[in-house]
Length: 226
Image 1 (cartoon, rainbow, N blue to C red):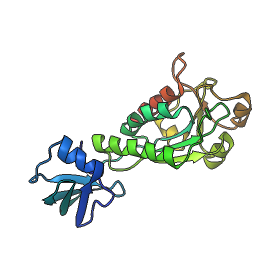
Image 2: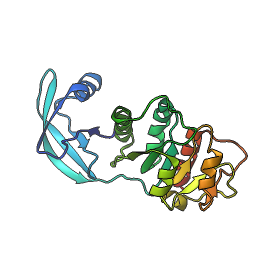
Image 3: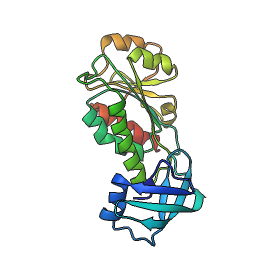
Image 4: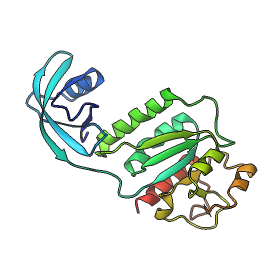
């Protein structure tokens, strides 16, 4: 773990308790003389803390040093991703985060799975996954997430976005990802949705294989790293 997340990191004193306390002091056996790095994921600073006191269920720390240490994606990668099963999104999200995706706009496509309506609980789960991924990889910014109601809204919100679809004839370039790239659900885009793409640039993967929705997200993320 490159650092620990604490929402109050940067304050002169912070308290560590709960799950973070158990991880640092029971699982990792952190010693009282150790210097601990923290980020708040709101700025690019790394905050170093020393122990003031360690108790049975909490530890008090005081700020020793602040370092401006940004570790952010080199390129802007915006995925506009039709909703699929939450468990599949959770499975690949840490890898998308490590690959430097800066934003994911989820949207309901016609063939999206609708077993559960997304809300605060689902986004909180994804946020926890992103924080854990940041702590492991060292990334200093938090990926942005949003939810759009339909394919039409996604296209209206991002008028310069491109489309990844089997009917595309060109391979996208890294620069195309800055304005957003639409990825369909497991069933692909419907005929009605494809009619909405008439004025958009449509791309496909550079081989004859059919990518799953999450496979397409991973491939585009890797493309954005080049």
